[in-house]
Length: 259
Image (cartoon, rainbow, N blue to C red; front, side, top):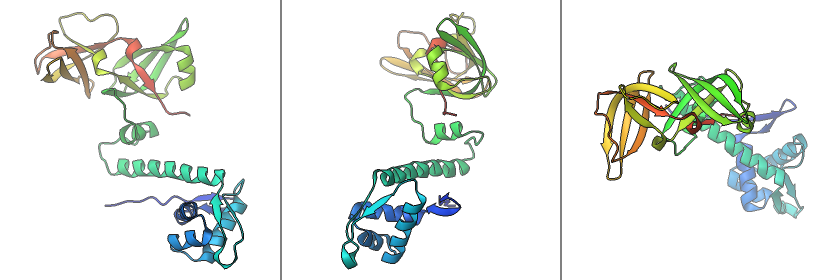
C-alpha cells in the first residue's frame, strides 16, 4: 500500500500553501516568470496569477514579486521569504515521509516523535542507541549526573555538563536518546568486576573477528543488543556466554528534540 500525505497550510481560515501551489512556486523560481511557471506546473496563467495574488495577500510578506511585461506576464522571482517557504515545505515533506514509513513498519515505535526521527531520519556513527527517560538529575559542581531509565527497564547514568543539561532542556520524565560508541564499551565475564560505571548484563550473541579489532555483540537481559569493539589482544567471551557490558557515564552522549 502506497500512502501519501498531502500537506496544506491555512492562514486566516483560507488555504495558503498547497502541494499545487508549492509546485507553482518551484516552477516560477526555475522559469523566472509566472506565465512560464504556470505552463510548467500544468495550470492556466489566470489560475497561477490568482494563486500568487492570494498567497501574497495572506502571507506576512510577499512570496513572489513580478514586473509587468504585457501578455506574457513579465518576469517574476521568489522573494527571500518565498524561498524560505519552499525550504520549510521541503522539511515538512521529509517529516511526512518518515511518518508514512513509521506507519507501515510494524517494528517502529509511534510513542514519540523522537523515536520516529531517530529510526528514519537520524544517522550517527554511534553503534549503540537506546531510548530512555530521565529519572533524576543530580548536580555535581559544573556537571549533572543524569539517571536514565532505558525502555527495557535498566538504569544507566550519564555525566554531562550543566550547560549541556540546560541546552537539552532536561527534566524528570523527558525522553532522550542515549548514544554509546562501540569502542567505549568493554565486555567482561560475570565473574570479573567492572570498573565503577554502567553495567548491562546479557548473553554474547556473536563475535566477529578482525585483524585489529574484534566486534562483540551482546543481547541484553533487558532486551536489545549492545556492540563492543575491542582490540584483538584483549580476550573476549565466547558466544552464548553470560557477560556484562561496561561503560563510563561520561561516555554516554544524550540527544533529544527541542520542546
